[in-house]
Length: 593
Image (cartoon, rainbow, N blue to C red):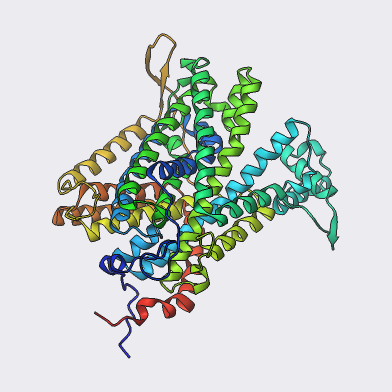
């Protein structure tokens, strides 16, 4: 028996993957496949747009605008640039290793098995946990539409158990303290009514569930289960509908823009703009879902890189324009609502268009669910092929040629929690997992091709970062410091085009949590200095280094509490890896080179 490879950093070689590719639906290729190749560059671009234009443009963009003002449009540009660096690295990996698995597979070939497992586990937060939030949000839009046409579902069938019970307890506490019901918030009163009117099961427990969130998850899972061809047709249709609505919003909204609403442009300084990092980044995380469908592309090495960049460029332009239109139609102070696009048109006296936008939001959320429900099973399928998950996760349906068991498990993982949980599943947690994956993909290119010498069909253009990285980092620090020092100024702009800076009283914010909340920033500074030194000595490629730095910086903006939750999630994942994955890994049975 050959010796086993016991290293936690054992790696899959690109040559081995390409020498034994998974079989397609017609049986071509190696063992352990069976996925059908139907996707073209148009379909892949559509999937990317379907994932990116969803909850971000119809929901989280409102809160981001409230915090950052009109300047949040610049945050979309900055985040898009960060994603573009990552997208270039994703594109090279996709052209080099055209198999399912996304960042998990890329990490396996560059950093080794332990890092690959961590990424695979972290991506569950992007796809599955993120989809729980999307399903609940979809339910809110859907039930709101039903109410608007006079169809009212019982509230105890449209609210999560956790939300209802929390609100009920809050109202009961007020009543016991002798406070009037008027002291409770509308949301608390709504939750109290839902809990009080719900059927009692036993011992005070009542049947309060978010049935629409569960049913939409079941429907989307069934669509994903029956085939990639059906899924891409549905996705393309939904994307066309969304783009039409977005175009209407931009064209009509432009006539209601008041330039004075853009002043102040950054009312809370750069700190206020950066408060929207998680919300804005949440809008972009879907573009990497394209890479999970590599085995279902007709020409993955050519089409995946193109589709990633097309989707990113199209969506960035739309996001920037939409943000400027929204903040120009009404004051940014009014945008802290869950349905900002619908809200602004109702505000300016266009109720029919407001209703049309609300309808489109239902389709937008459904398309996000579709793409993410496609992505998660394919990551689990790839991990199972490598032995890190039980073999059943790699099962491919003989008729539909989809990862059948993994798809069903994903549906259960999303649908059941959506019945009971509330929206306190913060998007920050989802964003951390994704940023972590993006950072490792950028770092992976620096390992497998630091000087742009790969013969893949697409490579990240090589530009030496020896001098540029230190200069750009110092320039960024200077700009951030200067902008923060000018935090006591407001930018003003009037209808005639006159503009300038207005001095205001400085705002002093208390740092909650003290030193602990500075830890992510300190880690970023140390990591950046180390990366600058290595880049200078090794003349590393500029773009992957910038991708690594920008992703790390965005992670520092998400807060220590979210990092704590992320650490707990990773510990659970590591426990599973060391009890099963490490022992059953196929590389554990390969002779040491």
